[in-house]
Length: 125
Length: 504
Image 1 (cartoon, rainbow over the protein chains, first blue to last red):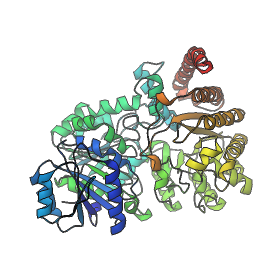
Image 2: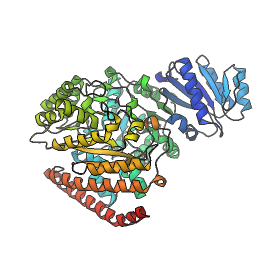
Image 3: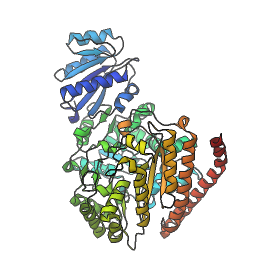
Image 4: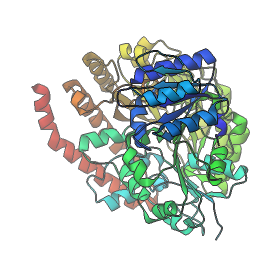
């Protein structure tokens, strides 16, 4: 189901809440891209805001001058939606960024051994 | 009537040839002041001719590129005039809509909006188009709506409207390499992402950029993409620099000539850099380009943009401006050439910070001198610049604005139009704050008044001597004169109040 522009991309799952920090997302994404020497990025978003309202929280991120191709996909707000993403993209290079207190999502990420970082606090699966 | 599964379109402010006067299109960036909206729209964006299918004889160049790519890839795709969209609501599966300035957040639209408090007509026209019966019905019947163009980022600030219209995807950047795949997935009913930004690694190579299949508005064709100067406020400079081969330029002029367009606008960020070495113009490729254009085109040759540094360098070193004008441009049909240029600031300090290579190959400290010399060269050679200034650049100080005002004073003797723009976060500065009216200082007001006086003086001169003198343009010319008189009258009413504010 992915577009050609998504092939070979690095995948970042963004689990968003109200209190996430734009700069951390930007810095983390840049770090990951440079470390992995990739030029394409797919953001998979889990958010309770709904489509396309969730993009308001991503404006600053999307306005940053990443020298990459960027694709943004919205998946929904539930744990099941997160599981869908992981199952579809588990063979791709992936990291998750989790904002706020999202225990149920962290549990899923750990269950699938997906590396994740808490925005504001470092933790690894 | 053929069935088009992919329809490409836009609203009237874009789907117009502006009476054959490209620069007149800038009226669409303002609100309808001084004239009833319908009359203003007729002046700024009259309808284009269409064929029996509702396909416009001339269409925006960007849409033509998308159309050409999709046709080359085997899709049943066509650009359709917005007034004829209703004919295709039952066949269209993918509705693609492009625009230069969807919501008037780009310069200079946002500035006119701020100053007048009224929404510019490009915004009003576009939103009305999206709410039209044809678009709503196409969506109701299941068409996917994909929007794109250089202003795609503006949808991030109109999320409610995005939801209302049921837009399926927003795509930003040069799309030739990716658009066929996107349309294929849309037609196959696959889930599309919400937002796609095409980065430098996915921009098309020259061989991936198709030749247009229909005429472009006023014969505009691109001769290059990208710019090497790296100014921080600019989004175009983030794209790789490519020069369109002369064979392709020739083909696209032929497409336009076949449709009855007898003029050509050579489009590039700095036309004088065509085939050049970095920031130094090279005369031979530029001359060959103009030789080709003049051999093929009996009407007018225009440039979209050039840089003041290129003007100065090419004339000082090669007498290139005077050669081009005397041997290729000026003719029985053409008395001048218009071109957009960037002054941006008259402050060497700000030039060093924000646009260190704008003056190159001259050093940034020479920037005001480069501007003045280039204006002098252009005036002597019947090149009429429409020059931009950017007000409210990040890091701007009061004395930067004063230096800019001083430069404007020195430009008085040179025929030109100067337009100040409020800073809009774009390019490398796209995560900075917008400039809004709360930041306006007395220095800004002083500068804006100087610019206005300069522009009104020379605009009247240009209109009298050169512009819209064709018989069939008499009504539009008269309206334009009325509009300018109205602006002068309004400013005259407001100036005493502003003068008091400055004195305080």
